[in-house]
Length: 102
Image 1 (cartoon, rainbow, N blue to C red):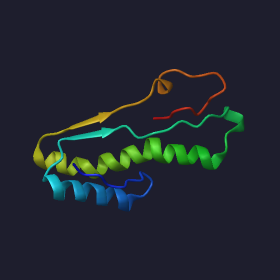
Image 2: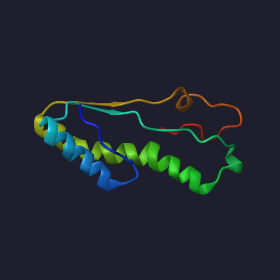
Image 3: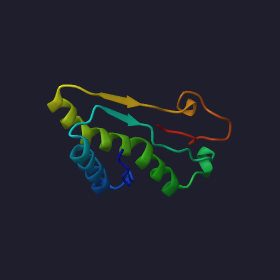
Image 4: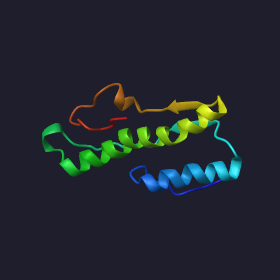
C-alpha cells in the first residue's frame, strides 16, 4: 500500500505521486479518476473563484493526472483509465447550476 498527498491543482504533487507509485510498484495498471466535488449555487449567484476552483479539480485535474500516467501505460502497452462521475453530471438539480462538472 502507498498513500501520497495529492492536490490535483498542484502539478508538482501529481508528478510526485506518479513517481512515488512507480518507485514503489514499478508499474501502474489502473488509474481511477474519481476526485471531484460539487459547488451548490445557482448560475447567476455563483462566485467566479469557486467555479474556477471546481473546474480546476474536476476537469483540469483529471486531464493533468491522466497526462502524467499515460506515458507509463503506453510504455507498458497495458493499463486502464477509469473516469468516474456523479449522477449530477448526467442530470441537473433545481437551483444548482454547478453541482458537479466532472
